[in-house]
Image 1 (tube, one colour):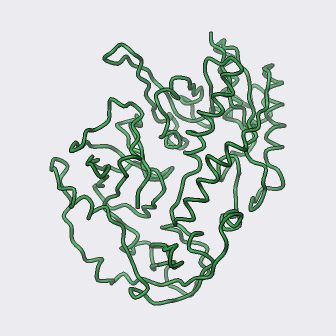
Image 2 (cartoon, rainbow, N blue to C red):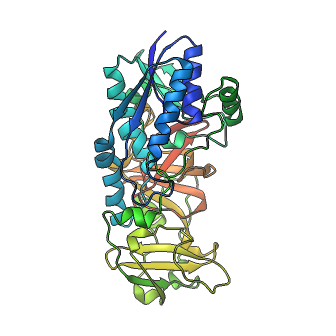
Length: 401
């Protein structure tokens, strides 16, 4: 059996994962990560990780496994939080949890685990891994959705590489959440009834504008409303059939975001900084008196202007396609990579928990273009689009604009 270092977070999922590994006969070692000290903008009290550590220690003691503690906060700040600040400053919407897995849990944490003699690292993610033999006889690792459709977390691991997957174990990927809770209760684990963590990975639930003001200053600007009758919404670009090979110019036109100027809409209010808002956002504007809610359609961080539209059906919220820059295209199994000019059908999600959407991926020199069978709401630059073939997560990339 193998020596497995598991990231014990103080939650029920990693606790049960550790128990299952021990049941399988592995030599299990717990490693608790401290990744964040600053509590500015957090909504859960003074130092949430202190409580997490106590629960991790209780679980380790109950399972009779050693527990080590490592402080990775310097790497977390530079690799995840600084990236997050920079993206918001540009008016984009990053996903820190995806970065946390790629840069911290399966990189910095993995290196710490290897120092402890680990053969593998394990986490409490709801996803699965399979292995096949490649044409050269080498193993090929595949990332699959978790068996629990309500908890599948494969999206958060969409940037992992073959090397990272080769060392990864996901002990609870075949279980449903209620089963995990049941096992924890049966084994008397202290985390059995503990609530799941929410918010930013290792930071917790935050008041985002307050959190971002650590680096990004508040700055008054104008809110302009774009009416659904805006003439440019009438542009008609025919969606290509899934068997067509459209020109790059057509794909670029389909995937282009709506672009507004202050002359396109009327000023209806003010805000505290365009970089505090994201496309599709409904709350936080403080402008009432409408029959339907106002939604963010676009932000301009250079001019510090926020554009909004009324109602969930507003055409400015919907787009038929998106683009991913060539350098941001990531394939978990490099042999699945499309060549320039190629295309393939996939199921796609552009945010966690979004139901999978049918789309065609076209690869061109300018990058990847995902054209959806039906328009998508709230496409936000900076977020990750992940594409699946059945249960398998094949690749992902950062939405360009």
